[in-house]
Image 1 (cartoon, protein in one colour):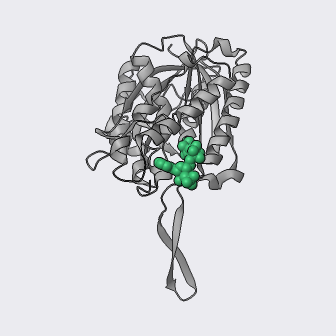
Image 2 (cartoon, rainbow, N blue to C red):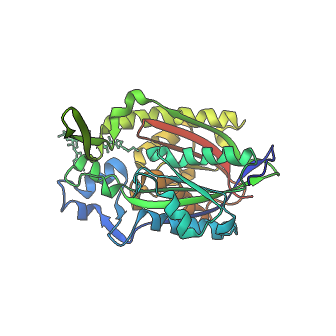
Length: 335
Ligand code: COA
């Protein structure tokens, strides 16, 4: 049964990540579509991506990431209360989170999927925080995992060069001793929905005279790159600025900026608008491409495990993407 304490805070005490084995470089991709390493790297900063093969799965990668986060936090799987899986590429439209719960042996946890594309991890963190702050739950795993290689049109050079596969996770724990989520903002603008989609493509089927059904498949990812770019460089700095103020900080108090890893040019432009030094920008987009909901926790995990991010450091983070949706948060790493 959930307990019912109030005035609880949130801490971020474990992280992990897993990516598929197969690496595909820009030069490799130039054998598939009419592109070049020069075009891709100068426009996006991406040099390679990891792509899932048939023996790997979303649930498998997500479970590995979650196990690492639990180990770092020193929390047993049986003590997890909630698993939020942020994904837009679930292996089961009924949800993939319960498969992860079973693989982890998190027998007590309730598990559900949350779909908000590249904003999904951030939305997941904010969702988890509500359960922790209310005291309903103590240990929450937030996982961001996506295998967009399954949904990319590999003959469309406008999109296929951008995405990669992977999973990342954090363990958030309730704390009676302060709140390490210092501010957040999450937003949606459905009027721009057509800019980035992985949409259902109905095919009509007449089941009975007068009963025409729409059965079909999901279409490949479609994107208006220029619109999405414009949206990101306008909305993201505003959102981060707002949460910095909410946290009663200034941009000089930010130790690290971890943006959704979509494009190096977007990261550079956002940092510049916020007057945050390039040295504080955590970036690994060159190695992984855009891994959608996984990109922020993969970047966080690398920076924590390499010793860049230390306990007590203040991190500004922002996710953005399809919806269109976006959000930002300020958090302090560690207990
Ligand atoms: N290789 C070579 N040429 C390519 C190409 C590729 N992979 N993809 C597109 N092109 C071509 C286009 O066909 C177009 O050619 P045309 O002018 O003859 O029609 C031209 O390059 C467009 O180039 P440019 O205007 O310089 O592109 P851009 O600066 O707008 O960059 C993106 C394109 C996609 C990199 C950029 O718009 C972007 O990053 N947008 C955000 C996308 C994103 O991050 N989406 C996910 C958000 S979560």
